[in-house]
Length: 345
Image 1: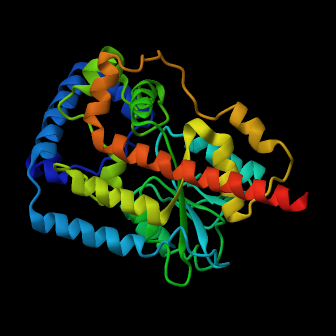
Image 2 (image 1 turned 180 degrees about the vertical axis):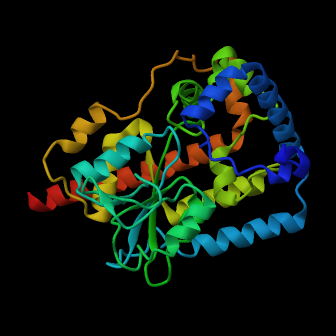
């Protein structure tokens, strides 16, 4: 009666964790309302995607991008002992396997929140309990001073821009990432979100729709990599966004490719000087990838494949550019190794 008299604002704060047990139970009970809500959000999301982008908004995006990535070393700059490796984790692009290798094979302390609230505690010997998953948590993490105190050997975040802000001119970030073909990534993510009950992005309602329907939803979030790198979270994209991301990837990120993981780790070992604690560890982990999910294959060139590719045309352009950069690095390493062998003989 108290809350009725005093209105909704007098209700006690909700303590149910999104994605938690009670949250999922309520979702299940209200399944049809959840489907209606998801549809409404998809329509709203597409409306935002279609909004024309004002030039001042674009200018502001560029300022944020430039300020954040100024804290990362250029790829061609020599490695400084104060530099801290920064892994931009692209979802469903072998990121979990990479994290396992960093800790279990190289013995590196990496960031990941194990137990809230975030702290400077280290779990399982190699995991610093720091949360870099949201803009707010990143701001809180910076106040912990974990970079200045040299507590992390590798900083990891899905947010390339916000994550880069933890570094400074005294402790620059040295960025790398692993990219996956955008069509394969989108397919994997669709099926993963149907089963990943432990993830905040879990969407049981996706079990009731086809991959084609998912891709054609009005609120489908396209070109994730380009949007994250350019701070263009909503609104239209154009060739200028793609050109900017190409420049960022070329100058600021050492890029690996998920379809070429052995070569990717040879490149990373060469750049950062990482060495296996036990010979063969990396190969073993790559042969048994972590957090992988099985799902129906989609034929390259099929209707749904082409629809996904078209929806993510800017990510496709970025991926193929990154593939060229990766090929050049691998070829250069191979040529250098051959020259060394010739000199030795």
